[in-house]
Image (tube, rainbow, N blue to C red; front, side, top):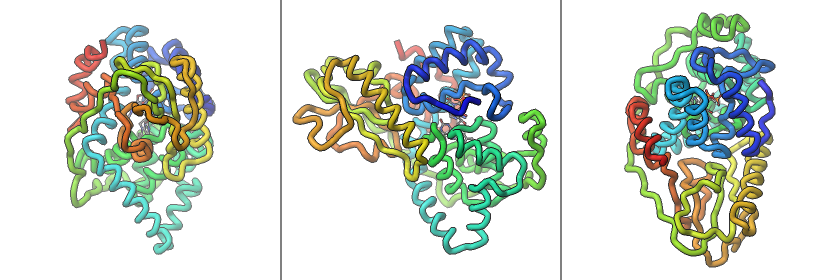
Length: 378
Ligand SMILES: Cc1cc2nc3c(=O)[nH]c(=O)nc-3n(C[C@H](O)[C@H](O)[C@H](O)COP(=O)(O)OP(=O)(O)OC[C@H]3O[C@@H](n4cnc5c(N)ncnc54)[C@H](O)[C@@H]3O)c2cc1C
């Protein structure tokens, strides 16, 4: 695929319309096939845009429905809702993220103390394992910032069950390099592969499956194809979904962050935005490519906000909002939420408000409610 992801809303919308014109109709049949870099992707490759909400889930789903009709777009819409499900699930199980971060720090320390583990880890992240496919996916990830979903599944499974490396270090490696690196989708997908998200149900990469869905490009030998799922002493605890705020009427300052960069469609009610600030909180250890993408996306959003609200905009510095009340889009669990100042009013989109309460357990509950979530958008 084209390794470049210009981080503007315009580029995201162009990718959406290319996808709908090119691959969209064949999506359900082709989406599991990974033809690798240099070939047009079988999926939309919209994830770096959706992750930052340069384009929103609501508009992507509406565009697919209007291009292919409800039936034709069903599989694609369902995949977009996996993203929504993981976000809602992490909001109500935030310790899945905080525990993974704590474990990753401890596992990095283990590398210093355990030479055998360190050698395997270094061979993995340098792409020197000798496992057909895996080493190329490492290179693709580092050089392009993106991997096909199936390659991510095979990668994580081989990392955990064949290389026997701690899953938290794999999730951390992904977060550093993925242009769509997302605390919810990434952490919970790694947990799902390991058999921790749906307890005891793990995803096992098999050579035959890799051969088939890479159209024979890869034929790895020596995979552990019959491992046990991982276990953990205690599953992440569920907490109630925290309530969102209502924007006040009158003048406000709007604070943008990397989880929601479409200020034009935020539910601001009768608030009048007279100043806009941008807060950039990168993932821990984010690569230069990811950091540049974050900054470019923020600058694009600030430029659009300046036109839309007709007010001064800029990256936040001390005192940027004066005495104005500060309103921000709800930041789900992750670096932006951790960096937001305490005194923000946090508003939630109708999409999240309708979907997240249905995301506390398995995906099937949210999938069954997709029509209700879509109806709540109007
Ligand atoms: C181990 C592992 C780690 C992952 N880490 C991330 C991550 O950090 N960030 C991320 O956005 N996705 C992650 N995913 C999910 C998925 O691989 C990507 O969202 C997808 O590959 C993006 O490609 P696309 O935009 O072409 O997807 P498409 O198939 O075109 O789907 C459209 C959109 O739906 C959403 N989506 C599709 N599949 C999934 C899925 N399985 N889970 C969640 N959302 C999905 C994405 O927002 C995607 O852009 C991970 C999957 C695995 C197995």
